[in-house]
Image 1 (tube, rainbow, N blue to C red):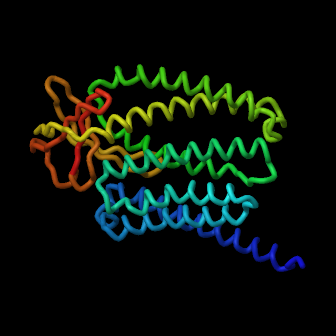
Image 2 (image 1 turned 90 degrees about the vertical axis):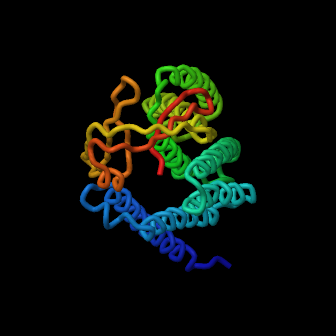
Image 3 (image 1 turned 45 degrees about the vertical axis):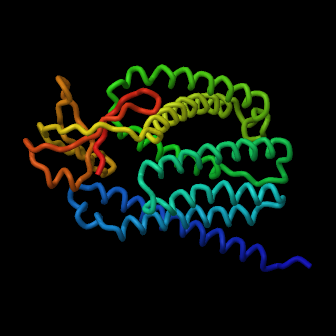
Length: 299
């Protein structure tokens, strides 16, 4: 017997999930934006908001895993779905319990494993499209984690940045060629890409861009995350600067001199407020796990 109340119940559940996502994402964005704001930093600079943001992100990932799990009709779909989303859930849940460098490593490996799972699921989808329900949200979640790693990697001030682009370009070209071959061979005949040629061309362009972003993020993250040796440098604060973006995010910088070169370094808001021009701060100079040296301010 078919339960007539099944569809209304499922519809209400999906609506409830969407409302939860909207509220959760809004709160997390507010914490992120106002937490780095020049005017609201003192209020949002607390352990409560750090925990609240992490809990909401973890809950949203967990709810998404349950929501996707219930849609699957095959054992491999259910298992892969739970593993895929909850890898990131676990990574965010331990954010305040482990050092930042170890957290970046855990997030990086979660992204690698989840990407492999996503590729497996994509091939399963191509071979048996009715046996696994895959949506745009699965790769979107991975892209959010890639963005988190990219933002962290971009905070490093590389002293040899020009040299780092050589492996980035090489790796990006190899990834692009490999991805295009796989896409042309397996995915171009999916109904979504048959609608018009513009969709396929756009997909080619997005694949190439994604490959270069992934190569940069991977190399920069590995160079930072797997390097534990540093040299402490004491530098004078030559000037202070605040930059506010059109989206409301505020970034704080100190102008410093390393040798004969003047540069700006990104620093936390509390350090910006408590340090005056002419004072000295300590930064760390790392050789880099891949040989690309960089300096960074660390608490």
